[in-house]
Amino acid sequence: MATERLVNLPALPPKPRNLIPLWASLLLGLCWLVVWHLDISFQTLLWGWQDILEYFSRYTSPDFRDAPKYLWLMLETMAMGLWGTVLAFIIAFLLAPYAARNLSPNPWVYNLTRELLNFMRAMPDILLALILVSSMGLGPLPGALALGIHTAGFLGKFFAESLERVEHGRYEALDAVGAGFSQKILYAGWPSILREMTGYTLYILDRNIRTGAVLGLVGAGGIGIALYDTLRMFNYNQAAALLIIMLGTIIVLDRLSGLIRSKLH
Amino acid sequence: MAIISTSHLSKRYANGTAALNGVSLALEAGQFTVILGPSGSGKSTLLRLFNGLETPTEGSVSINGTVLQRRNLRHVRREVGMVFQHFNLVGRLNVMTNVLIGRLAYRSWLGSMLHLFREEDFRIAHEALARVGLAEKAWVRADQLSGGQQQRVGIARALAQRPRVILADEPVASLDPVTSTEVLGLLKQICREDGIAVVANLHQPDYTHQYADRVIGLNSGRVIFDDAPGQLTDNRLQTIYHRDSQPQETRHAELALAHA
Image 1 (cartoon, chains in turn orange, cyan):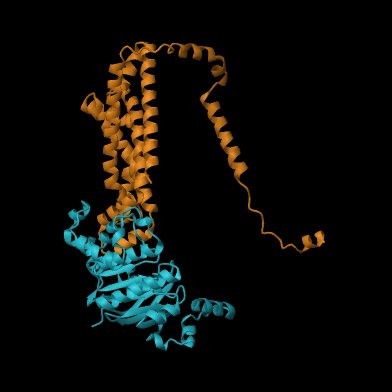
Image 2: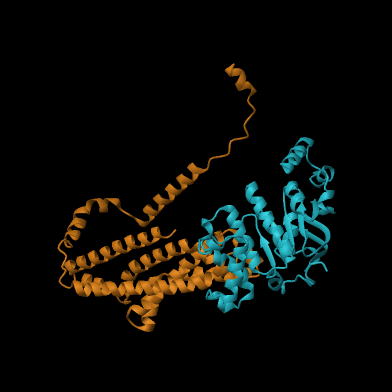
């Protein structure tokens, strides 16, 4: 019975070729080439573990005597991150509708806005900060601008993609009542993606505060400068205190933004 | 005078499909017109040509004597309400705002950007909501309502436009039978009381007999029936739903479904 059934089976179409092993081995080969070419030595890493431990041991007694000053600097970094995010949000809010394929008035505007956002994303914020600091002077303002320009590229892209995913019918209903472009965005677009927008913006705020701390290294104000100075003078205990304050702030912020996002529905 | 008139209207999509072929019609105010036809016969395309959501390949549409053109589109559309199969409300906005959307084309750019509507707009929206029996839901989020209620909000949005025409693209295709008769009854009542033209795409010959003043049968993009619903015999119905490339059994099945 069983064999008879097998005989009567219709032939399967030819099996498609599985390319995963090929790609996986190519990727592995590439990784090996990189290690080989850059002369990365895992032995050094392995033998050097004692040195690494010794280095970290220098940070084990954090010195909080200057804590008020550090907290103030942390606040400055947070302000820098906040203003960077506000700037990014405004730019993204204005540009995103033009960068959404289904809303953009014509392909030229669409491509131009898209490329503008790509350009802003492609400019590293640390480089922007370096340029702005040297043209505007030291302080948190060039830092905020650098963060704003760089992350506007991200937010704009995120918003545009969310706007593209909104049901076509909603935009069509607005077209059908005779609403104009900006009315369509304001009454069908933004309300439909409010939740995603909030999520993305909080993420960018979080990211900007973290990056803001690093921007201090190029003179853009905030806690980064203090960290740079203490490390340069080998004050490991103060550096440890600064790192702990930064870490604590980031944990609190992360929890806070998670809480806000869960409240939205 | 006809409120909607078309002359030699044809629509061919970019992929070569001919959706409509030389349709000339004149629809009167105060009449409930139902467009019947199998899927792909061009019903939806015809309705969407009436308010310029599609542009004709040949021929033209005029609403109340104005020929639809790119530059007068918004002006014409504000007096043409549209009701959709999937309601197309903005779920996160409350019912009142969804109805006020019907007033947008009457308002200045700045006012609408600041979410400022006039006293008058609120009154019109309030009236529209009261008419569809949902005034008490004014401040509820639209996505909290049932399907039938959402469709009534959709009708209220169209009413807020103070329309001369309401186009309904399969308005009851996503609703149960009881809700369907409610929605169609409401559209019929509006048609009578306000003396406006209502044009609806339907799939159910039963409802057509019950509500239509005039029936237009479409098949393969051509008008093959245009008469009072009384003239819509089973035989004529079969011609409307006829498909060339279809085996006999499925055609029967479809007819049975259409009767269901």
